[in-house]
Amino acid sequence: MGQLMAKLMGIFGKQEHKVIIVGLDNAGKSTILYQFLMNEAVHTCPTIGSNVEEVVLRKTHFLMWDIGGQEALRTTWNTYFSNTEFIVLVIDSTDRDRLLTTREELYKMLAHEALRDASVLIFANKQDLKDSMTTVEISQFLTLSAIKDHPWHIQGCCALTGEGLLAGLQWMQSRATAN
Ligand code: G3D
Ligand code: MG
Image (cartoon, rainbow, N blue to C red):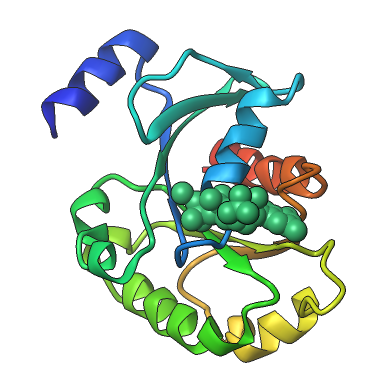
């Protein structure tokens, strides 16, 4: 366990659920994390680091890591994988051209040993834009129904207004307490 993680565990106690927020650049990862921090229903601690924030919903603590999505950074994703309980995959629902790349990144992560027990929340973001793909279209393209070895959930959202974000977080909360 890294030194920072050990320190954070000490501060917050043992019930800390590790979340990694992944997705291609421009998908809306940072905007989503920012919305969680602004939401009144969600209690947060002041910024811990440049890319990690604590989000608390109904006494369930999530430690959320916002991981950069540019191509050069994607090879570093696996350094964040250990002890991850939730993968939050953020998709720009208007970005048809890169959905195949997202699909490849998703299946690479699901095959990774360190993520064997991780649950996957997919945010189909930017639903406010009129050319956005629906959650059904995205589910079909990503063949989500074929994923049997990881719990998964897809949630449409708009990170700008926050619509759909709490529903996604609630799904994670119910999974975290079910385990
Ligand atoms: P990233 O962290 O995944 O790279 P950001 O993505 O959170 O930085 O968001 C990338 C751009 O998408 C930002 O625009 C942001 O405002 C916009 N965006 C994020 N979520 C939504 C959404 O739900 N709807 C719309 N219409 N735009 C969204 P800018 O212009 O600031 O670069
Ligand atoms: Mg970002």
